[in-house]
Length: 101
Image 1 (cartoon, one colour):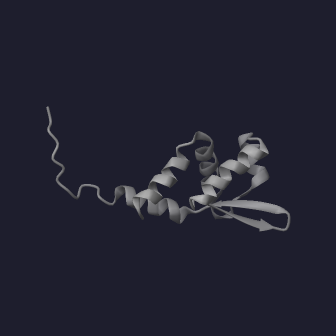
Image 2 (cartoon, helix red, strand yellow):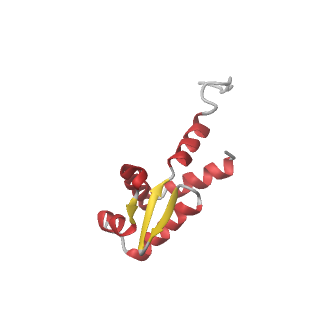
Image 3 (cartoon, one colour):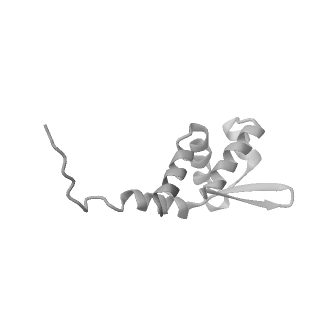
C-alpha cells in the first residue's frame, strides 16, 4: 500500500458519519446490509447516505451489489486489513532518534 492510498482511506474514515456507516457494515459481516437498512439504523437522509457511501466505495472500503431493485453494501475487510498492516508495518523496527528532555 502506498502512503497516498492509506491517507485517502483514513481521511474518509475520519468523518463521523462515514465511520458510523463503515462500523455498522463491519458488524453486518460479509452479508452486508441493504442501503435502506443502513439509512433506517443510522437515521441518515437518503441523499446524504448516498454521498457518504459513494466516498467509501471510491477509496475501496465498501462494495455495492445490486440484486434486482435492492442495493447491498458490504465492507471490504481485506482493505481494512491492508490498511492496518500498513500502519503497523514499521512498528518497533527502527531506531528513531528523538531528543528527550
